[in-house]
Length: 180
Image (cartoon, rainbow, N blue to C red; front, side, top):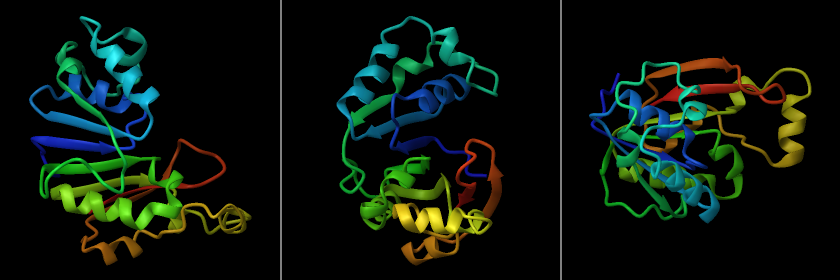
């Protein structure tokens, strides 16, 4: 929907998402911010390889067009509440199962994602919308876990454009994709 020229992942971990996406979409400029030094170091160590290793390439569901494009990613250590980028720096800013770990700083992190985005924000997270059945609401409340609904995100100035539910990654919490 966005056809981004620049993409930022907030909570990039060890970089698996960006490493594969960069090779699928080599014309796109990818960046990632990760809180831990270990995650950034691991991602950068993969960039030292001439070609994206098969073990990481196997995670991609898309065709890898350039197995050397992983070398161009800008990985940085940083805090999601103080992203080290100017306003409107990226066409697309996304998180994938990262905000779920930031409940205490969630509002600041999402505000920062909005600030550095010039077109769109994408979140693949355990939104409350997908956790209304069985014991899920009680477990989320007990753990002070991700409690935001896809509609609540609009308070950050985002317009909801698409929602997809029942993301299959987790059993204990329902995951949904929301595109703003």
